[in-house]
Length: 293
Image (cartoon, rainbow, N blue to C red):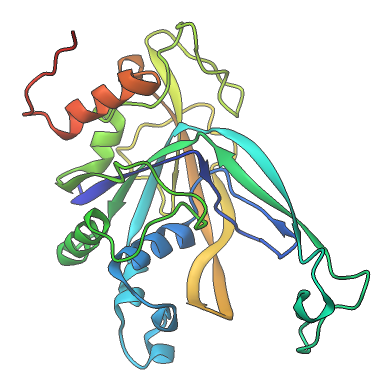
């Protein structure tokens, strides 16, 4: 059992790049570790010039370096759909205002327009258990910052604002148990008119349960539910931040662990107002019940 807190990342758009280049900016199917650490660093008000994880390189331990001790277990409430946005940059400007080159000059006539593709997840929702064994003060500091962020949070890119309910609960005794048994799922109940399609690995709803994907930056514990259709349980992602300086961003590769678990179908609370009311009842269990006329 590990103390921690719960985040929920939902919004019109999200984008969690792993190998983004200027002309083609990709997104993972779920929040990246570097993106989550960056989200918390922004809430804490850590400037880019101080985003160095290695104490030796930073000249001593830093608040940003301590964020690498956080662990994230992500529940894929709703995977959303892929969206690609087509951009052009620099077209139609006079020569002195076209896109600058790496050598400090300007692009010549006929080469001023740059085309890029940016990839997003639309209408996706992820609920995340954030833990840090033996670091209760770090968890408390991060949760308080997310509740009142220094800079406006965004879901991978500044053009992707989150839903208002960013942090669900502080000081949760067992956040993984909450994900498995209590926190409402942002999807319709199986068999409903708007039932979700099969999961990405081809599995379907079974009886009174629904298959839900989990990803984690650490191996799942022995008491975490197992599954017979885990697909590829371990992959490698290039999203462990080393430094995120304005013109010097470096990442390390790390293992990502995945598991699909059958959760109670009763956790599915649909879309829209129905889901928001269920989420509000979870976040504010002692609030008086509201009635509608």
